[in-house]
Length: 265
Ligand code: KIV
Ligand code: NA
Image (cartoon, rainbow, N blue to C red; front, side, top):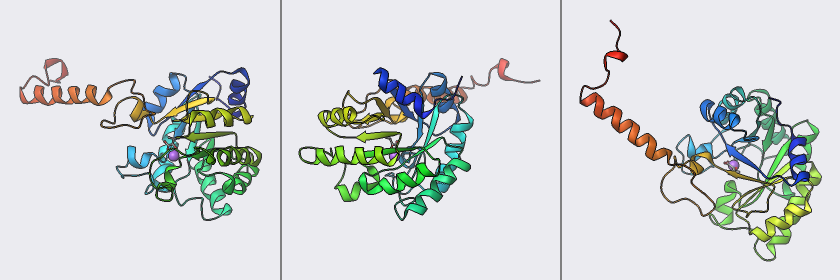
C-alpha cells in the first residue's frame, strides 16, 4: 500500500470525502488502525494522560514521545504519522520549534508534526515548512494552554469566532497542511472549513469538518468514567479486558490453567 501523503488529504477535501484520524502510541494499535484504513495517525501529547499516567497533557516530554512515534511509524505501511510537539518544546522560539520537530522527523521518523496555536505561531509553522516539515495546526481549545484558557471550555463562540477564522487562515498562509479544531461551535468550524483550502479535522467541532479525530482509548472504551460530550464509544475494551484477566486469574486459582495442551513434557 502506498503511503498517504499530504496532497491525498487535500484531494479528499476537494472530492468532499470526510476521513477519520485516530491517535496511536504503540505497535499493535498502530498496525490495527493502519490495516483498518485510517489514513492519518497522531502520536498525540495525549500520551501524557493516556500512556504515561500523568493527569494532563502538560508534563510529557520529547524524550518520552519520540520512542512512541518511532514505534508507530515502524508498525504502519500506509498511514501518515503525525507527531505532536509537547508543551514547552516549541513555544520558546522558532528555532526551538525547528530543533524539536527535526528530532521527531529524524529519530521518530514522523511524516509531519502538529503544534497548538493560531496566528502567533505562524512564524513557527513557516520555519518548519521551509525546513521541509509538514505542519498540522491545532486551534480552538488547545489543552497545553488549559490554565490560560481557564479549563476545558468551548472556544470561538460569538466574536471569538472571527479570531478563530483569522487564526486558521494565518496557519494556512504560513504553510500548514491541515488544522485541528477542538471544542468549537459547529457553525464556526463549518465557516473555517469552507474558508480554507487545506483540510480541517474536528474534535468536538461538529459534522462539517473535513476529518474527525478521537483519542483511541476514548472511542474504544479503554478509558472508563465520564468522557467529554464529543466522544462516542464504539467498543467496551475495558469491559472485555476486565473479563479476560478475571477469567485468567480464576482459572489459575482453580488449577484449570495451564491445561495439558499448554504444557511441555
Ligand atoms: O494529543 C491529542 O490526542 C490531540 C488530538 C485530540 C487532536 O491533540
Ligand atoms: Na495534542
